[in-house]
Length: 271
Image (tube, rainbow, N blue to C red; front, side):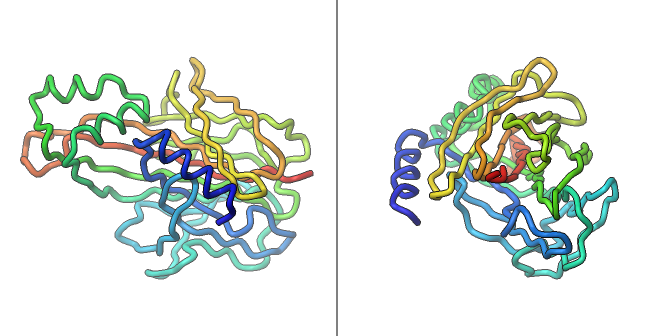
């Protein structure tokens, strides 16, 4: 880790104690030459720094690649790391890797941690809703799912993203690899197929020297965010849905809350 990276992460840790673990698809290379080999890791961590996770069937609801309008189901072996490998011979164009996980859960034993998380992810009414429901503040569960995309390029990388039908997702409305890209990344954020207006988008921006900056943005009334990006930088866009779990009172051990995490990763070529 570079010195600049170390101080950036340290500062964020102090400034944002509620910072939560993100999940994203991390290509080894976002761009390869025509016919090149694409590989990508699943990563989980904070501040756009995380450990690589192996692929396991029981943790994956869907895993696919979309290229040239064709959807290809991905079937890696259990334990594969990197999770995504596309062999040589891939046609030129934009490659969109899509991964949606099965549900996992965590237990909150500290009410303050939940409050910090809800505030950080922009859900100011969560505490009041929790208390109004009469739920325990001492020990309760949350279930969570991940809904991740990565934009990768073979050759010139021309092409367009499209909605993949995930429970929540980003759809890129601009292609950062296209020759006509103007430096503004436009994305649509959806939940259950509908736009998410006035929703928070957290942007992780990694520069060439490995330092990461984090900024907050919002979608407009149509659920679209337009975010300036910098050539030579790598990006993770993150947005979270926090909702009450279905029938949380049916079993005291059932989760009370559900979070759905949308993620989009891409690189802006240094032209």
